[in-house]
Length: 521
Image (cartoon, rainbow, N blue to C red; front, top):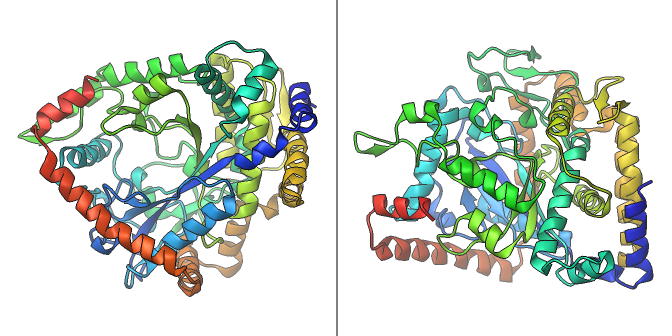
């Protein structure tokens, strides 16, 4: 058992600080494709009845016009975040006519990249930049990979707890630096142990055959429409069909904020020969924002990110360096097709426990060697996580997935006991018990459940997901949205459209100059 974790939990309990944990903030971002009644990707533009994808706070698009993204505010109670997310689903479904919200991470059948419309955000400079960034992703990686959807879980510790925790540790840095270092400690331990989340909650062991097209692969055929791996947990999070030699050279392992920011800044400033061959502006049309390893920070894909709300026109790196880490964003969560929202309270509760144990546990910097082990464990679990006898690697030796998983759950259970006491409930220990059951019986994992339905009912991945999408649509349309919330969401539609119009009318420089100014910050 971790002495550091045990001592910190005792300090929280005995010092009377544990009630502050009621102030943990949670927010959820969920992506989902719009499809028609035959499970074909919607070719319609983002519905104007949902407002402006550029300026709406809660309903926007990700890569494609057809890839919706819902964003909740941050709440102290995760139930409130889930309720808000459900409201966004219900409100949106009422605007979609005959279209469905695809309830899985891996996309519907797509005949080719020409069927994927890139998201558009209007004629303002910032709107054009968002569109061109996505055009750049097309040229660099292809469109198909960008149709994968997921759930991002945002988490932050109560601000009042940080100075007390700093005093306990006898740290004399600025509070901003201490808080940022604390979040980076959380991130390092998350990266070491996040394979467990992939095992427990991965829900993408299969996909439509159209996703691979003519690419070579090692997947097996379940039927003419469905490819899979028998022990996979999350093909979404695997290296499947995705090779990024440019980003592989970055080797960012998140040891400290200054080195993290410097690495990303260097990548945004460093030309990459393969991207230079694409060209930036060809025949008067932009193909990408620049020819560097990264166009902007968000192009660097990681399963967890340090975050800070930015000011208008501010780069994320500058926000982090000037004001420190504000919250973290967990990005490795698959959409569970059997849940109306793709995630539920029990999963959210466990993620909270997992993140708190990562924050309060023992820690050290991640070496290049450990970084390679982390990547290897990640790939083993995404593609073979339920394989009997699967072994994972530590810096000292190999260990079975089950044994290591129970060690991590032991630490989460310590946190659960404290949170159950604080909230006067037993839901956190119950969340841990549910995960122990999945370690004991892999058939209880979402990935196994999905494959079992496909086999038992002899249906394709497309048929299953379309059926579940239609079932969830009925559930979400039958729930009531409060009159106050309905009025609020309806008002945001008009507000966002007016805000976009103001942006477009307010530009005072041409786009070329705007882009130069942004990139040279």
